[in-house]
Amino acid sequence: MVCKFAGMAGAALIAVHAAGAAEVAVIVNSASTNVSGFQITVERSGKAEYTAGPPRPNSAPNDKPKQMQRNLPNALAERLYSDLDAAKPLSSLPNERCMKSASFGTTLTIEIGGQKTPDLSCGPGDNAKLQALARDANEIVRLFASH
Image (cartoon, rainbow, N blue to C red; front, side, top):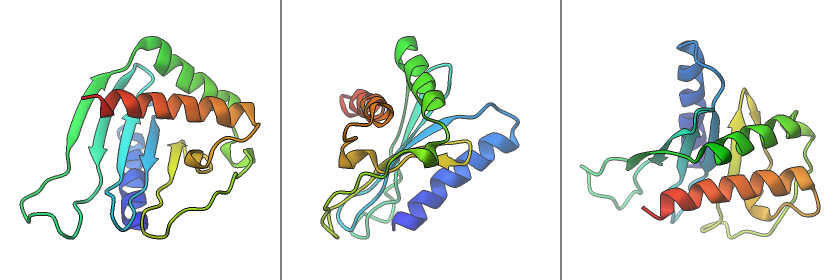
């Protein structure tokens, strides 16, 4: 399931690039055995779209993924992109590891321009760049969770 949802995020990024648009940040919460994942696409303008992952196996056949759109506060969108730019290349960030349940564990990452952060849900440790990205991602997720 995780791979299937990660493919959705990748397809979204490819579609955006094919349309000639600027790079967009995609916050991805992976699915687990018992939890549907989601992705939040955030444009530099602050326009953001939340899309729930594929329906769970026990979902009704006509269940469709939930989608919501919001305009993020300008300061939050600017801070996210500034923090992403400061952290590039994202592959250079330390990969904090943490124990997770095989059934209930999910990951939280940010993807942009073919790069991907380590799992931000493990805690950023003492790395300031990871701390900033985790703060940004969690703040954006909370904005969608409150609606």
